[in-house]
Length: 330
Image (cartoon, rainbow, N blue to C red; front, top):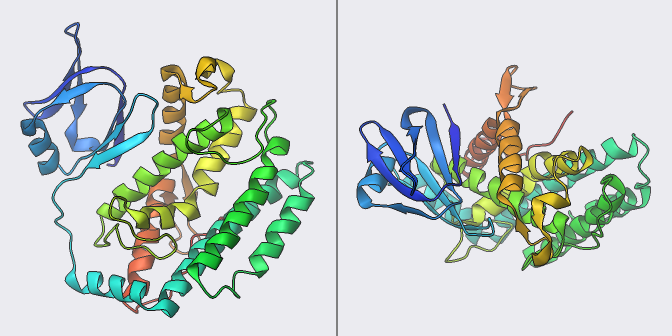
């Protein structure tokens, strides 16, 4: 099983027999069953020792750490056991070869654009006045094939997102002044939700990449960096419209998340714990949600779709089958 465990309490995290136990300052404790857990998310001030980390490594459990504001700061991963020198060489070759890199970079943008378009079409069919935004995105889509550099392609991707975000005030029923994407720091409820949930998608992609032989630092659309797992950014571009964006629309339009879930004094920059918990519960349910796969002819979860995306990329890098990005078909 691939269960995620979310911890908000402060205290000490340690191994206790065959479980990981969090003991709070008042003496209470929570036990995490390691045999069904693959990811632990820490949102509280937690102390842990090397004995705990060693056990997490032995059980192949990933540990993701978030700061006071709920923003991702880093992860602890067990020692890599699923490695392939041949795949690593091919992964680097596809980055060094400009033509091969551009092929993959364009595929990631095309996948993202398709899934964004599906979201907008859904709301247009339900009476939302977003025809202009759809026309703009369709125009930018026609420009993708003609891009000759990753920088130019990133500009197109940015314009697609800019047009997409302009439609959000029409899609979302709550009165929120959302004019543009602002990251550091987010300046309203929507930007804070985007930052928080996109980070969850990013860490999920990282966890699924870790299960494969891919190297998460070698990417094609985003520039590889020394301090980030940039391949997660590539893959998450494809899945953010399905998981993150649809989730935000649902949370706000159903009034599951409202102003009361934010610290207004921080200009909605800080999500309260009750808001985070509601988001994480919804996120966990979304990852477990299943759809009937058109090719596999069986039900697969959203989380498994991300893993399948990794395997599709591996097949492309090994010259087995040309990569086609995941595209929403429902």
